[in-house]
Image (tube, rainbow, N blue to C red; front, side, top):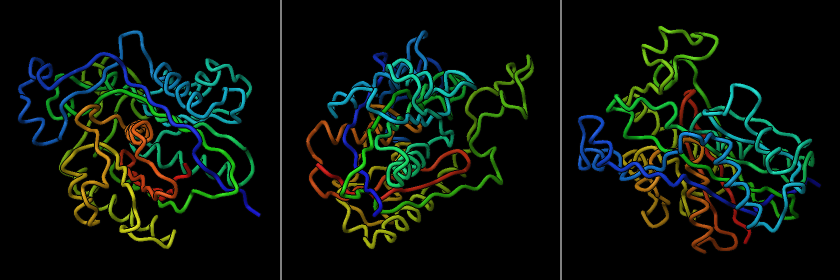
Length: 328
């Protein structure tokens, strides 16, 4: 009989430094009304100069461990979803496991941009359900401010930093209900970081041309995001023999409030079921969903058997959703 999986600990961390819409208005030609009306964002948390992604991940992981009443040595594998690793290699997960005192355990990264948490949840849950490991820690962590061009008005207002962590554990009850993942790499320049990889290694020219920052075609991303969020949510629910009416909560990737509103309108999900914290954090890529889940958990709003759908889209282009039943 296949082992089930449940979430036994949730934790999050956001840097202390705050970047407001008013602060951004001092850097580029923008204002609070313009940003708020188009994105729903008010503030972002930004790493200190000496902070890296692993620092955020470690703090979120410690809080998840405390919530679960576990120590790092009881975790069998560590997975970090990020597009802002400390280094191209080794994997940030290796650094996180070491700093938590769990050297020697399995550790690897997932790099699929804002879809990182839902991809990671599918993979990590699979490792537990298959019996390969009993406990897996999944962390979504980003320092997007490190790759944000603060001279580009179209992108600099969007991104923030943070981390969220969950601990998955083997269980007689299976909380993983269904997953739907997808990707289309035919047009990567819609949302990508052009410089720094093997295609365009770092040179004086790539630095001068700002190729090491996030580049995005906003209109194209918007159209793609809404349709894929709707389709993947419905597919994940269908695999669980459920409908949107069965959801207690929809936790979408926090990229843009207009995208979230459009997707939930198509899904016919009432606003009180949609978890939105974009005003506080902005777009934190793979960290956005676990940050929102941690808020739900800490506020005591999650109840036994609540059905949650996690849904995201991002660079790749990629998308995905996971239907999950909460075990209190």
